[in-house]
Amino acid sequence: MLDEVDRGIIHALRLDGRAPFSRIAAVLGVSTQTVARRYGRLRTEASLRVVGLADLQRARQAQWIVRLTANPNAAQDLAYSLARRTDTSWVRLTSGGTEIFSIIHTLNNPAGYHSLLLRDIPRTAGITAVSAHYLLHTYRGGPTAWHGHAASLTEEQQRQLRPQPLQPDEAGRAVVTETDRNLLIALQRDGRASQADLATAVGWSSGTVARRLAALQASGAIFFDIEINDRLFGVTTQAILWASVAPTHLDRVATALAQHKELAFVAATTGPTNLVAHVLCTDPVDLHHYLTRRLGALDAIQSLETAPVLRTLKSSSPILIAERPPADLSVAPRPRRLVTVATLPR
Image (cartoon, rainbow, N blue to C red; front, top):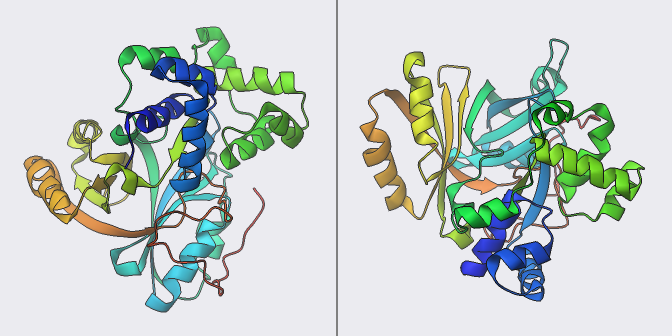
């Protein structure tokens, strides 16, 4: 389990994934060496990874949440194939291992043809059902951290760590453009990569990288997420919740759910189930208590489907780091045989 310093470091990195160890140390009241040593241990033993991601609207991107049902002998291979693509994130095996939950990233424009949705999935053998839901609005997740990752620092400590916002006219100009593509790819791989490594990756000078990063981060065009083994936070039971809510109540219900400490993700989508959420609980009893007592008290929820998460193959970053397998022992080694789902350049 994590102690107070570990949790403080994780919360600090969620606020500013590139914050210097010296600044984190000053806020936590420990030495810089302690922060550096703890960070290294969390990376090695807890699969900690800091990733930089673009705000969807600023990057002109859209997201689709896809549910795939596959034959039992094909589901795991298919899930691994999806995880290896650079246009997917949050690939999970759910519901007895025959259903796959994934988020697909595509362009947010009328010409945003997406081969995975329109060509690759329909022609893949073993898939028995497909349901695609356009993500309309995120209430919890993305720039808004799960409560478990953001409950350690005081408001004053958080203020000291947050990047200073730009002036309104400056923020309006700091949008993600095509020239930032290689920078974003590098940050998706490692949000704490050195400026020298980022400069090499994008072909800019270190000074240009520093200025561009500062502008994008301060404007909210990019943010930093944390990938870590959630078992260290006492989480042993996870599930995807698919709810149907009357449109007139949807915003109110989703806003309320976003405040629940058990939920790491809450979003409004298209489809007959117009609200999706990701719940993290300590055990099945805790999940049952949440479903019956907290969600059960919301009369506006007309129907609810619970899909237990058996395995997470990919988290928030579209870039899968194969050489860093999850520390969770329930994650099986990568299978040798993969179902073919074409990987196209982004």
